[in-house]
Length: 461
Ligand code: SAH
Ligand code: SF4
Ligand code: F3S
Image (cartoon, rainbow, N blue to C red; front, side, top):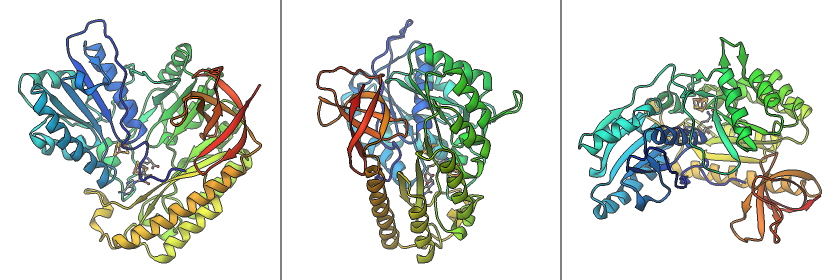
């Protein structure tokens, strides 16, 4: 179970050292915060930098250029970056040449206000202007600050090869932006309008990844299932179907989908292909019809439950996760109880649970944030406790089942116990004392024990 109020959030992802052919003498260190889109964007920025002769390093002390790829989704995501800047300021005392740039959603939201922050930031670049990163670094080296924050209606970085350096799983962005305008959400303002990558480019990208030995791809977007390529007449169901056929040996995942766009065709495509992982992250946000309407989510709890029923009818062992916001403006006790009730009905395998955080520019920002901190906290705790209980019970039911697990590496606690992910996206720990299994292998594990967060299994041949 994911109890924290974060996505992969705020975890710092960095790259191992990469050599470029035309090294220009500059080493860049990138820290990534926020969602998977940002992780893939950092790979795109790294790809652009390497093309220009930069080297990407995974040790901040080896670099004079630090880029923070940031998130604005909740206030605490931004607070974290401000702390990090204060920390980097101390670091600059030891390294006078240090250049600091802010990329991502905070750059887009705060624009010029970030220049000079902590007497440190000299580069600010929004999500649609990453082609300018090399130019703005050069400018900063000449003592000039630079801002590039225009949003684009067309930019998809289709021609950029992301610099992927981690493991056997790869992110593939298929669309950017969001047109849904949920009333609480900053993303449409920081990421701009929806636009999709051309269908043939995605197919070629996954085929290339398979040739490189990648075992799993995750198709990415803020709203993957509103993907549309009008020229090639492909919606998301068609894209997923064709990807599954193009790379039959690869596992295919996707995130994040919106319940409104969860069509019957899409569910059927998932059920039809063995290599499409049986896991869906389907954010519900609330179990109250009134609150969902205020959130502008375009569905009712009944509609959501009907989608879940259809999904489970077609794929009985599928695993499901969700996002829930607690304490949205005007949320009363009855609304909260309806959220708990919906959770009981669906019995999600995991959830990312957040307190509502008012974001400037959004529609809900104009409404009074009238649920007290104390009530928000209490309701969120009730949601978390219920989810933990359900996750634990669901995982107990896994005992005796057999899962195909993509091996990742040694577990954090014990180097003889290795871990991987099931097709249903659960962490599975198994014994690998004699190092028989390598990262990238797919092994069959019979589950023998579980907690709310983890499954434990024996490899069966
Ligand atoms: N596009 C995805 C989610 C992107 S943001 C989707 O629609 O599902 C990830 C999650 O952050 C959202 O699902 C929502 O639960 C949460 N979130 C977004 N804005 C928030 C806010 N202002 N306060 C609290 N949580 C928020
Ligand atoms: Fe935000 Fe809603 Fe778009 Fe998701 S669908 S990114 S929650 S506006
Ligand atoms: Fe955060 Fe931007 Fe992703 S606001 S969640 S990094 S799209």
